[in-house]
Length: 448
Image (cartoon, rainbow, N blue to C red; front, side):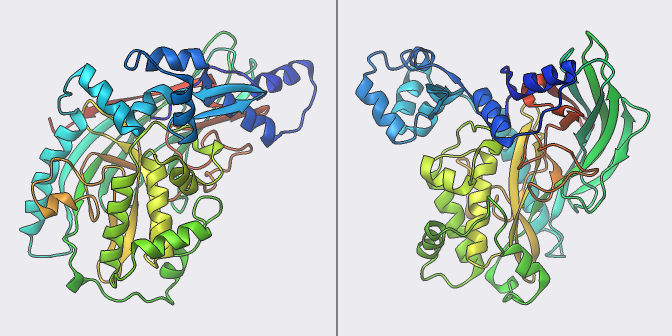
């Protein structure tokens, strides 16, 4: 989960300037500096306090090794060495030896709520789809949900009387596996849906700040999410029409995070050497990312120059990071692919989540959840490859791409310049960053 922060910086300067009537120009460098300070909050002493709970005799040389291997993430900011806020806990996810030590001390962990829900769900989805006479009817196992989503800005984060602009996430209506989307209520009488063509589905509202009070935006809605399983076979997949607009768009580079660097080109070529079909290539890439990059908590995407290269260099990644790596490798290999995201809605385990889709001629777009990867509970090949061509029912799709303009457009750079999930808020004085607000989602499962 992308967490909230508590550090002030550029935002404080904007408030001070507004209070004095002084106008200052926006600076991405200052904004980035503030964002990095929100993520890199830990001193060496704080990191050691966590590590020594499991490894009491930590040496300076061992710390240096972990840092050199990018297993203990830090950055020098304002001449001070600061560690990523989750660097210590991430170490035990990234480093197998450290992870084994912690597991031995903590003891065996039970099955997570997410694993339990997914295992049962995909064992419902696969046989139901296979029993259908129409092979391309991949959707089943509907889950109806009612959501109350709330974004709360801290009191006095914005001067009294100033207008706050807010974009809240809203389930897409143009996705086959997401149906019967119904808005029930909004906190503001006037609201605006995003243009249906926009990659980020939102409800836009405005409200003036009141002194000493939090500013609250909320929405409630219902929708039905369907699971999907495409029983992919070589016989069903046809050669690509490489001249089609779809093929050209989704095998091309995209600014910043889908860039065909020499290293990525060489990697894609080596991973798919000798493989002839798109399905073979996609599975080779999927397994390689699955096996080589453990999940770890991620810093804000807006602070990373090139996310796939970051994953390669740091040898770990969260859901969106490994998805962008997989999507980039697919595009290099001539497999159309795009980013998709929103929320995982598993009971007692909802969270922000990113995944993607790839396109096979003759089949169409199929979901791929690189982060869920190859399930440890898989009992057969269909379950093993379920998340390449299938997806569970517990989803809310908000975004069909990354880093596009909001609708209506935002004046200042977004808090999340890549993804859009938690929401976005700004006022005349600037963007309101994550450290100045919080969000929450209350889910009622209507099928229960």
